[in-house]
Length: 371
Length: 98
Image 1: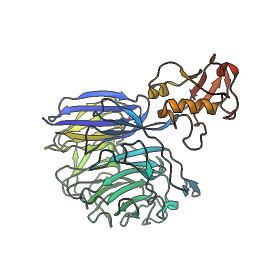
Image 2: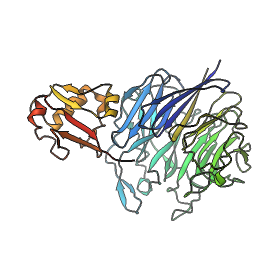
Image 3: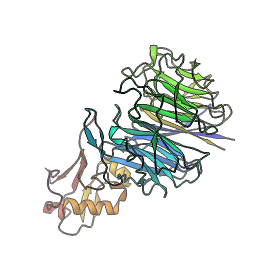
Image 4: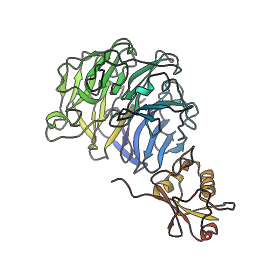
């Protein structure tokens, strides 16, 4: 019997939600690390019992926790993130240059093949890697130092590297995204990087088509088609069919194309999901109706999914790492809200139910599908 | 033995209850106490002071014998009562946030 494990990071601790493949009844455990902000947790595809967790507070800084038993017990591991060489400067809110300063880990991406290898996306934006199960972390400085770094600037949430995508067909290729710099790709295992933002159009920056400076909120890929990427930008939903070399807008008939999350169906690479948010200054669903929008055509044509979701007086947000899919058939879709609800659909979005309603504000949701 | 009182989050992280007792060679200073604390409990590295600069984290304060030692030099001798283990060095999370 298959099992699904949902890893939920919140403003005040981590939670692990478990169900069998029917995804009807759920066991909720937590909070783990109560009182700490859990920006992200993710399990290793190579060993699902290995889970990495980013834990932080303003008082005590960054911790990394590791579980080797599927989230039942945890061990603090290496938390030393030091930029390689002279950190240099990036653009500050007022246009002046500001030194790079480590603040926290936003995203952890375990290797597809080695449980001891994982990547960490941090604020101020940089990419780190461990090869010893998170005992130690070392920066891949080619990203931060490739040349455009002084033009990167923090978004409202900080200058965070929040998205890391590993190409299952090409172990040398990796994609990352930074707010507010844009998307970047390496084809040599992280040694060298280049911006992949051609086709993005951002009215809020001096040059709307600049090489960097775009506030990319999230990028998603279906592992079966690694050259096709979907992006939720600050405004605009975008698509690339050439590994990010160029992008086309696919916002289509969405009620608003502002939002944070985007994800792809596990088995249908042209089926994608977003949660439209009213605007950059009003971070809640339009009309107080929480609606997931699904496109079965890779964008442009979208349908609202509402069954089981609140359709009045709902003013929560869904943050960039707070949506995930399982790989069962039907594909399960999950997302968490800043109101503390975690919603699940066991039929690819047709019907939704809350797994939990009253957690702290949800920062991230990841799903593990277990045999 | 020098005693150290940790804030709740760090007691949980270090998996201790109550004060921590440490062997600290003289002179007993903030630096020597924190060095001994981090050697015994490596998970506390970076949680009280910066990994590299060893500067106190902004929302951490040090108190000894009812006095705020947060702005004293890291190598200034702590009060004798702390050095003798009669009073703990308090590591306190500042009241901040909301």
